[in-house]
Image (cartoon, rainbow, N blue to C red):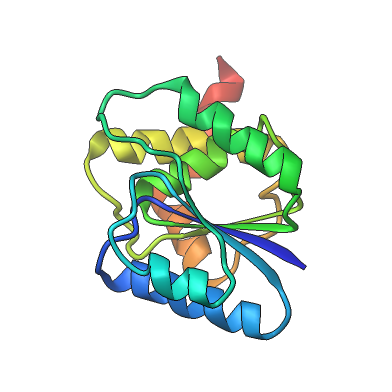
Length: 166
C-alpha cells in the first residue's frame, strides 16, 4: 500500500510530530511512504530518511499563489500513484483537494485540527474545495464524527442548494 503524506511545512510542531509518527509506523508495517512538504523543511527530515522514508519539498516560499507547485504535485502523484494521500494543515489540505482534479487517487484524508481553520478567506476556500469534491462524487455518504461536524459547520448542503438554484 502506498501513502503520500502532504504537509504545509516540516517544522517543530504538533502536526509535524504526528506526521512523523504516522509515517514511521506505517513504514514499519510494510507500507510505502513518502512525505512532501509545501515549504522547505526545517525538521524531522533526517529521522524520516533514516527510516527509509523519502522527503520532498515543493519549495514554496512566497505567499502569492503559483500554479507551479500544484502542477509539480500533480505530476508526482500521477507518477508514483499512491493509494492514499493524507494531508496535514490548512494549506496542504487545500492543495490536496485542488490537485485531486488533476491527478486522481483513490483515497484523500484531510486532517483538520479545528472546525475553524482560519480567517474568512480560508473558510471560503475550504467550502469551494469541498464543493468540488462533493459534486465529483467523492464525499457523498463518507462522513462520520468530526468530519460530519466540519461539513455541518461549513454549511455544504446549503451552499450546494444555492449554487444549483443559480
